[in-house]
Image 1 (cartoon, rainbow, N blue to C red):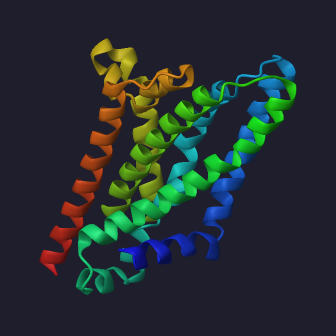
Image 2: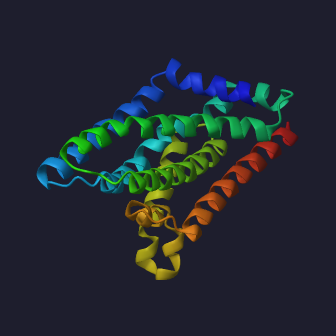
Length: 226
């Protein structure tokens, strides 16, 4: 599986995908950082991630939409399905490599934490908890993005499906409080306060595992048909 992770990770930087993802996130994050720090005179590093969570909705598909859809369109999917590597390892390899890009992006945000430390005393523990919640949210998004990419050979359609699902999940709590726990971005709200909610964490992990399992099932069925 390490070979797949290495291959997929490198592919993000051999193409513009990795640079576009990191660049877009940091540009938008910089705007929110400027607004919070210089306009509202706030030194709360963690609050910037409220807006950062919204950014993920629109840029995670950049990482995921071509992962499996492009393999199917280009014909290289057949090589994957007939390779000695299991479908599970292939899916997990693609998932982990995309998650590593998000981790690198998170590490880049510590530059802003350093700037805030010059103006005030941001709380490091709260910041770390926020980054954990942000990573859990990103992992959930990536897993669904992989699932969407596995059901179509058109990466644009995969991206549209992914964004549509994320936006739909935003508004679920508006229909009923019962759906509050199904809104992925809503679950993130406790983390910027430095609170690790066990229930929210379990939901994130469960959702991620469920999407990965569904992706594996889709790929396994396609392999059996071939």
